[in-house]
Image (cartoon, rainbow, N blue to C red; front, side, top):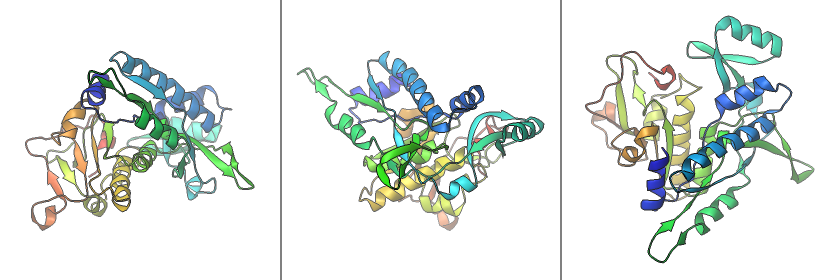
Length: 318
């Protein structure tokens, strides 16, 4: 990943902001320190992962700025009544039940296993957005020979650190016991920065229909309307579902903000350059020409079939 990002930043002169997940890490930290709150654990994991990414990018000549990013949420959100964000490792049914009873955790099925879930309120405000924008606008430096290098901000890792404003003193913040969905926060970050594109990178490719079956096929491109109409990803709320919804939100919100050409894509981490050329993964945009009434709003990738036995079940949707 690092060499490809370096090429996009230094050679093609794209302005890039990198974000990341933290589900496994924050879950492990919660197991080690049960008394710590999730805002603190989220900050710890953000620093941990940001450091590792910074090390990797420095090896390919890219200077990074990992930012501890606070994200305002509503502490009275409906999300607290129905925890939905998966954290930590998977458990069998009996082990999950025992952990739920002994530690008071809420456990929900994730595929054939169970995982802990915590509240996931929607992101309302990214407090460091101006700092990120400033880095993008003023970080370029040239040596006079056209050799321009940019700084890579790393922000909103794991969905950001959830905080809320105290009503009586709006400038005073307090931590919130929650984990914000990383894809939703990434979509908000990309929208507020006016990004041309929002890439969600996975280890399972793009959006597939009937993944793991003989008739599996991958979407090359699809509209938000098509994805919403077919309920793509709704069967997998812990993995592909939030990614598809985040991509839809970015495209639709960008459209409302006047950025009509904005698009999103979901694809494999190793295929970044091919995703940009729409040779791999799935592009989500407002205008897609499909064939026939039934195919309107979607283009299927030809000459590519998925494995009959899914290697990572959460990446299928139908």
